[in-house]
Structures are given as C-alpha cells and as structure tokens.
Length: 154
Image (cartoon, rainbow, N blue to C red; front, top):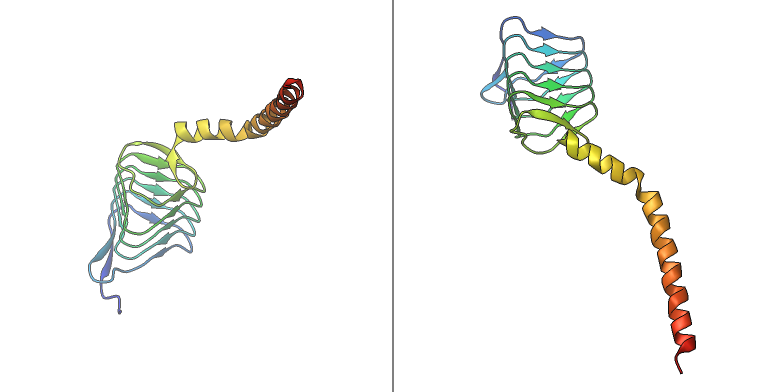
C-alpha cells in the first residue's frame, strides 16, 4: 500500500542523526513542539508524539502509537504498534512496551512494569538460589522422616 500521508514536525523539535520518521499511510505522523529525538531513533507511520517529549538513542516507536506530553523514553526502548503512552510517563532503558501505559510514573523491564514492582521482582529473583537450596534441604528432611516412620511402624 502506498504511503500517501504526511509528517508534521512542529516548532522547536530536534531530530538527531540517522533517525527516521515514517510518513503516515493515510493521515499524519505528528511530532509536537519542543520534542527531542536523539540519534538512531525510528518513528513508525501514523505515530503521534506529544509536547516536550524526549526519546533517547536506539529506540523505536511502532506504527499508530500515541505518546503523550512530557514523556521520557530512555535508550534502546521498543514500543509495539497501536498502544498509548500517557502524559508524564518515564520508560527506563532497554524496556519493551507491549501495552498501554496510562498512569504517570516510571516503568522498566521487558515486559514493562512499574519500577516498584520491578524492584520487588528483582529481589525475589536474586533470592531464588537460596530458596531452591532450602527446598532441597527440606525435601531431604522429609525423606529421612518418612524412612524413620516406615521403619518404626510394625
């Protein structure tokens, strides 16, 4: 399908080297005023990027995604198509965004999640080895107790 839409870049927008902003299929791809797009950023067709938004290097915003005002997208972030990112959202580096984010806040990880949840999960992941060792020890104790019970029963 031929892309016959436009790209609208409003006032005071900065676009870094080797960045691409795809023209819309039918409507407009819009980058609103005072937005900063770093080097090596890919903006898909029909995307709308709000006011005062910053997108760091090696990030990609897939087609028909809407990014709100005052959003920060750190480096190497990927956003899938047809999602909405609300005003004031901050997305940490190397995050993968596959769903809408409506509430203002800091989000990180793949799949992306609120930073407080991410931190709690990271603590649990770090403790998995210790937990696994504890389970193994408990299983040995259970096996020993079963043998003792079997041998003491007439």
